[in-house]
Structure formats: C-alpha cells, structure tokens
Length: 278
Image 1 (spheres, one colour):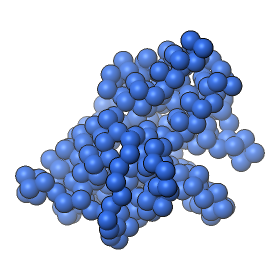
Image 2: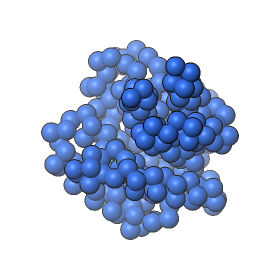
Image 3: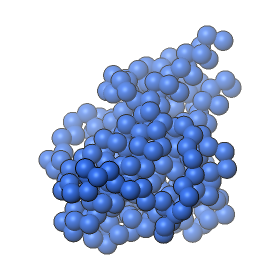
Image 4: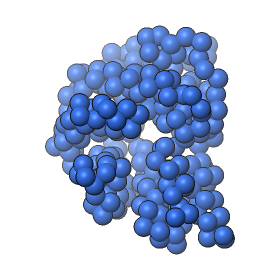
C-alpha cells in the first residue's frame, strides 16, 4: 500500500538530517565542549537550555544542536542534587540522536548503537539514584526496544529487560502520559506473535492524549514531551489501517499543539497529502 514507506519513516522516530562522525567517542559517545557562557550556569539553567536545544535540534534536523543539548545535560550532572534529572535528559538526548542517525545517515548503525548504550547506562544511574522514577523506567523500555530493532538476536535478553522496565513504570505511575504512550508504542511496534496489538495500541495512544491534555507538572524540571508526539502516532496508526483522512486530522492536531513539530510538518503530513493526490 502507498502509505507503507511513510510508516517506515515513522518507525524511525523523529529522524533528521546528515552530520559528520565524531573523531573520538569516550567512553561511548563524543562529548562536545560547552560554550563558554554555559560553563558557570547552574544545573537548572543548563537543563532548561538543553531541553530547548534538544527540541529545536529535533525539529530542524540539527545534529550539532542535539549534541550541544547532550553536553549541557552532562555538565548539569555535576550537580549532585540534579544528577538524576540531568542523566535522564542525557539519556533522552542519546535516544533522539540515535534515532536521528538511523533515520537519515547511511552506515550510522554503530554510532547509533553507542548512543543507545550510553542511554542505557545513564538510565541505570537514574534508577539507582531514584528507584521510583517512572519516567526513567519508561524511557529505558523504549531504549531497549530500539536496541532490539537493531539486533533482533538480542531480543530474548533485552525483551525481558524491556518488559520489566515497562512493568515497573506502570506500577509506579499508571496515569503518567509518557508511561501510557510508551506502553502503547510497545504494543504498536511489537509483532502480534510476540504480544503486540495494534487495536490496544490505539486505545493507549488515545488515553495518553487525554492525559497529556490535562498534565500540569509542578516541577519545572519534569519532562513535558509527548503531547505532540502522541498525535503523530495516532496518525501513523490510522495510516497502518489505510485511514488517510483520520491520519491527516491527527497530524494536523499535532501541528495545532506545536506548529514547529518538524517530523509532522516536513515528513508525515506532506506524505499523506502526496499519497492522496496520486
């Protein structure tokens, strides 16, 4: 069907443009130097700036900006009181960077794998510091899932770890919209023979959308990503069922939430419109 290439793009998750390989990775991922004006910033400011850079880098396909965000989170991790959040966001940056590399760069699998390994290590640190971090457990599930997609032979081992991480996240925060979204993504991307269920995934996406609509985090460092993304996935689910009008409506809703959402504006929505015109 005509929508399948578009769905394949979606499954790469927020991919972006080309970049040059880092000359050295230590221990697993290149550390970019911090701009001089950020070296003395308090951790909260570094995390806030890093979040803005990560989002902007994703939307514009700017790998350098995404790497700068990661570097800011690494710097913030020096603050013991903010280490858990800083490591969480460093892992999120690694996850986004890996998806970017896999989506647009040929021969980037090794680099992406290094970022995913780094994300796992960061998230393990987070759950050691805060075993009740549902956000970290949910993201760990997603990272393991991406590792399995790169190396299916690891599925037996990583599949169990991934499921344990998701179970822990749901136990801790069953109504957290990112936890609900993560569970729905697992259902959507897992083959039916291994327990995946597209209908259940759509139910999860819709529940997550409702939860995002009323989310009001009290902590300014708390993650807020996911609201726009859930409508992208609702659209992709509709495409999987060849429901183009519903998919288009979902993508338009994502842009209503965030007009700068590059994945939808430049990839998903134009793909649907082009398919409809053929």
